[in-house]
Image (cartoon, rainbow, N blue to C red):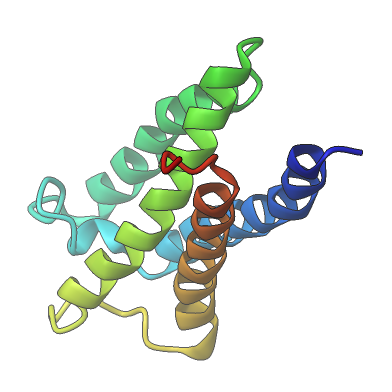
Length: 137
């Protein structure tokens, strides 16, 4: 087994756990009416915000799943990298909005899902970057 194959087998579970945490957060986001915090949706009342928020995830998830299962290894690799980076950025966005009066992600579960996704995303990114061949000769 080459070093690259071993590194891939080690880091892919990091991505899978991070993605599972991020997707589970989206379930929690419905409970906490996240559309009330998002700049593009905050003007909607709950009767309209809820379906718009949920239905907006259909094309997002479809594109994500399509790219993660793409026949091109480069597309799959870039998608994992981009989603892992988003996991980290997403936690920063939650921190930025945490003082909004409509922000209700205050419990251990909400913090664990958002923070856990960021941690596993960062670990995945670190593993990918550490496995890159050095450009120094």
